[in-house]
Length: 243
Image (spheres, rainbow, N blue to C red):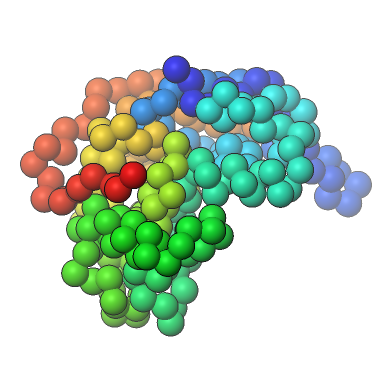
């Protein structure tokens, strides 16, 4: 079953007297449980596509359905509701609140969802345990390494049990060894059934995905698949999230 269905997506921007065509009629399906890397040079349209898939932007024309729900044409409040219910975001710079503990950072999406305190704390702790940071729940970002901060960000993305994780350059601020640890984590989450779509400009990071989409000048020029990466021996403790 397709989690993402996009048809003839276009996006144009007006900059002064120039019109920029960021996307030019892009169509694609992404199956539930897929692991997809989106690649391309600066200005290729990959970030624009990610913003549309994440309901952070809307196409100029075309149609987009997420989990069979029509997204194009929705009002900002409705898009925000879909983001909170269905999508978990992971960003290059982590975007954690600096004076707030890891547990409280992970709780934040549930505050917006109106979930009560005791359930918030239980689910946030379970999410941190799922990414191997249960013992660091009380630490602030400054007391955590870059890799640990990204794990907190991934726990925050998971805590509302989304259908989709969108990761925008998730290893861009990390060294090679830590990047590999984060990609092992995303791969294991995918093997547990989570749909993962990541934007990256790094070919070695893209190889972790089972499917690679390459964009150039607003057009998808490559759609290729590869075998699943084996991370069965990765020392990453992942447990079940509470209902």
